[in-house]
Image 1 (tube, rainbow, N blue to C red):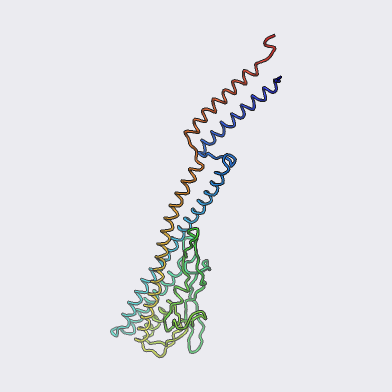
Image 2: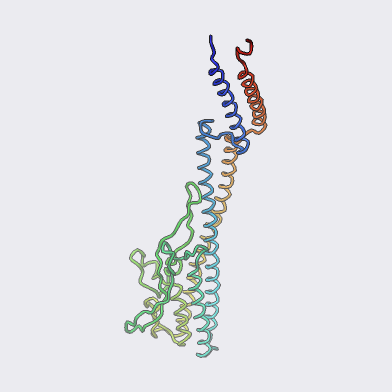
Length: 342
């Protein structure tokens, strides 16, 4: 069989290129720490690595959602704590002002503090998270949810100020697990504008069973009390939201009813605080589950794609020897010629 010089050269160069390719591949594996550089290295393992990476990305997103969720719930918890503390102070002032030892001027002074308390409650109800989203606006969380408006006079009710809700009744949820979502907040209507069991407030919406009582707002309760202490008079019950004409009750009846309304508002908000606490506990539990799952995923991913350094270094040395041998063989082959023997 005749072997041309060109064939010998071609075979030698191919052998050196193959050795050089394997050597470069091993060096790349060592530099990246990965056994699989391209899918063709191990198609089955490559598919598994892709699935594991996607699961890790999803779980990382769940953890990011949990961080945002906990932040929003903690801010909401702080706002509600502040509102509860303020309402408790308003209740103390109401009991104080209901005492007959106080005259009209002293009650006006108390009314001024209650007015400031109403402004504080409104400010807390308009709190926003770190991203600028208002906590109690529902889905409409980019606009201030509670604003002071002037209600035109409708005889016999005079023109008066009222806190209007500009948000909606939506509730946003965040995904914190493959099949688990938790509410990241509460809308202001349910929290502050729809407290059941009062005898003052807006007419109930059609969906509300009147047997549960006419809904009222926290703001109307405080405003009613402020008006009673400011004027030293009782007011009419069963009236529209924040409408405060002089009327059928005496002063003590109005203040006593207002104290009862404050108690209902406090109970309503405390229930919301309990819900927030339950959601925070559930979020902590899911965060722990996600962390354990991430550890398992990363362990499986490491087993599947990470390089065995001891084996790779041994292989690298062997491939270096093979490449050197191929180079030396080529050096010898290229010098062989019949002319050397003539």
